[in-house]
Image 1 (cartoon, rainbow, N blue to C red):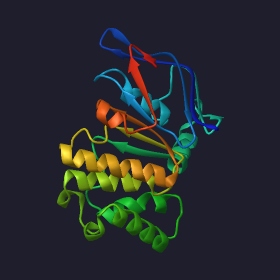
Image 2: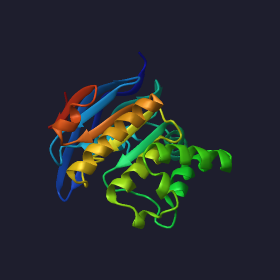
Image 3: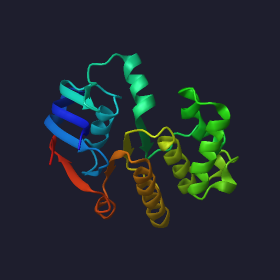
Image 4: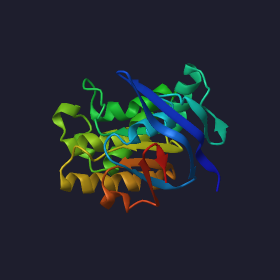
Length: 223
């Protein structure tokens, strides 16, 4: 199977006050096609930084990152933005839905950005949201949705362009137990349905056991 994502001796650090924090130390990592990885670790272990590097939101201090076998760690901002738009999907703990738009409009936006016809985008968004049990919530703005409903909209937005790689950072971290279980199930089904690969950062071992592989991040290493 081809690699969707590859880290080669990636190191990353940042300055905090007068201290230098080493987040990753010469990390090697491979993510195969159609594979869902759980990344577990304590708070502050570097899970979010790892996802930011994988999602081209940060640039590593050292090492190389490949997506779909193409080196991406040295791309300029324009190329990085284009790659994120076409090949990556993001789901966060904090749900970054646009408050002035409805659920349907929030999910349509990624399609419109890449030039998909408006009616096609509407139909695609309706189909995805309906499959997630939100058929009667299409025209509601985020403020009128529950936390679990908002996260379902965020997942729909992440998968609508059928990215090859989905990155999820504590996607159930702000939800109660019932909503967490539902969102975990929907996220897993959505990733499988699009045949994407995924890295899901979580502190929950119960959630991690549902995925294909579990990696732990600790002291700048992944194992």
